[in-house]
Structures are given as structure tokens and as C-alpha cells.
Image 1 (tube, rainbow, N blue to C red):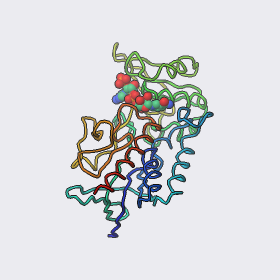
Image 2 (cartoon, rainbow, N blue to C red):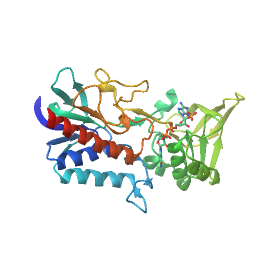
Image 3 (cartoon, helix red, strand yellow):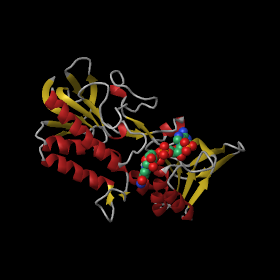
Image 4 (cartoon, rainbow, N blue to C red):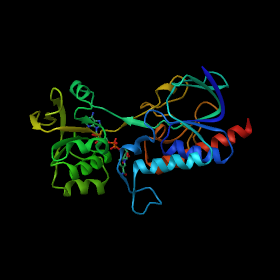
Length: 309
Ligand code: NDP
């Protein structure tokens, strides 16, 4: 096992992780960043980002994350592919282990592991994953050009996915389990004005049909209990996210949903020297710009910790 010692280890490569890396490396701290299993984070599976300040015409999420990485690299951050698979925070020496068989000792660790898509957990959903079932319209929508698809969920993600798919496919069935959407009013209006999107209120998917690929869904109405079959080729699940905090739960205080608890107004966790940023600790705002802001806070908190210890 190779042993590495750095000033700051950053775990994760979304807006929070890269922003933290820009700040710590510009401050002259030796910075190692591990990208994780979704390099660039959730923005790499979105399309237009219209609400990140500084891009008056919007920017594609994947393109923005390439720029974030370049900016962090420019100041000397060591950016590596791979996962941090476990940590040992049981003593004052902060240790992490990578799946590249490395033992990393750091003066401070900034956690920016983000969150991942949630699934319905139906047997048929798992069996047909990648065969018509997806959690990313931008990645997979192309395969369903001119066909009918479904999107599950009533939040901003579902609205965004449905609008994106409406440009490619012939029809989008939007399956919403209540009689209202959680999405912002502007997104709800765009959905309702789009004649290629049909909303199925109070409905949930009972089964995704198909052997080798998706050929339909069975939905059930939660009020009337009536079932209905719809023929289609693709199902996009957009029902929210789960924070990627599993490897820290033995050491860090997490809330009931698994988000890392930080001291209000800071990125401090219950362990000195460990700072949590971005969606791994934020279940309220969850925006690229707020994640970047908290990455900056994490870097400044880490710098202060290192200079005082
Ligand atoms: P949300 O938690 O906001 O919404 C999840 C949706 O999925 C809800 O409608 C929820 O229903 C539904 N849902 C959850 N579990 C199930 C289930 N098992 N079966 C069926 N439906 C289910 O998640 P999002 O990912 O949409 O958004 C997360 C955050 O990111 C939000 O703050 C959002 O505003 C933001 N965002 C902003 C964007 C933008 O500004 N461009 C784009 C995308 C996201 P119910 O309402 O009944 O709980």
C-alpha cells in the first residue's frame, strides 16, 4: 500500500470540491482531490444551467464542471480519479484509504461527496436499469427519440427531465404521486404549457414491463386504486437524492436522512479538521452556487484549522 501525506484531502469533484481545491491550492496548501465515482458530480448529468451567476446565456453542466476542474488544476491541486473507499478518524491523525490502494494522511479533510439519485426499488426497475430505465435524461434521452417515455417525480428535477425529453420524444407521461407538484412555479408552468407532456396525478408506478427492454408501465391511482397500462419505451426516475455519506457514519454526526451535521454558519463537523461542504451536508438549498459557496467556506475553515494546529 502506497502512503501519501498532504495538507488537505478533498473528497469529491462537484462544485463544492473543486471550489475548495481552488481556494486551498491558491493558499499554498498541498491539495489532493479524489474525484469519486461520478467525476464532476451531479451537474454532469444535467443539461442547461441557467441560474449560475456569470453565465448570462446559461452553460451546459458537463462543460461547467470541466472548467471547474481546469481552474483547480491551474493552481496545483493534485486531482486523481478513483474513490475514497474508507476512512479512519479514530485518532488525531486523519486517514483515508483509496481504491487505488493508497493510505492518505491529511492535516485536514474536506468532504464534498454530494448526493446520488434515489430509485423506486421495484424489482422491474432494477432488472431493466440501463435497458430503458434511467435516472438521467441528458445521458439517455437520445436513445428514445420519437418514442413515448415516462418521468417519475414532481420536483424540479422531474420537471427539468420532462421538459428536456419533450424536445426529443413524441410524448412524456409525468407520473406524480400527489395532486400537486413540488417543483418551482416557473417549472410547473412550463410543464403545464407543454402539450407533449401528460401529467398523471396521484399516480405511482406499480410495475415496469418488458423482458429485455422496457415496453410499458402499469400505474396505479392512489385515490381510486385503479390500474392503467401505458405503452412506452423509457422510464426516467427523478424522485430526489441520497447524500453520499455512508463511509463517514461511524465517525461523523449525520441527521435522520444521512446528511452530515455541520455547526450552523460553518462547515465544521463534530471532528476537528474534518469539514463538510455541498450536498453531503445541505438538504435545503442544493444548488451548484450554494455548493460552490460552501466549498469556499470549507477551504477557509481548513486553512484556519491548519494554521492554528
Ligand atoms: P425533490 O425532493 O424536490 O422532489 C422529489 C419528487 O419526487 C417529489 O415530487 C416527491 O414527491 C417525488 N418522490 C419522492 N419519492 C418518491 C417515490 N418513492 N415515488 C414517487 N415519487 C416520489 O427532489 P428534486 O431532485 O426534484 O430536487 C432537489 C432540489 O434541487 C430541490 O431543492 C430543487 O428545487 C433543486 N433543483 C433545482 C433545479 C433548478 O433550479 N434548475 C433543477 C433540479 C433540482 P412528494 O412531493 O410527494 O414528496
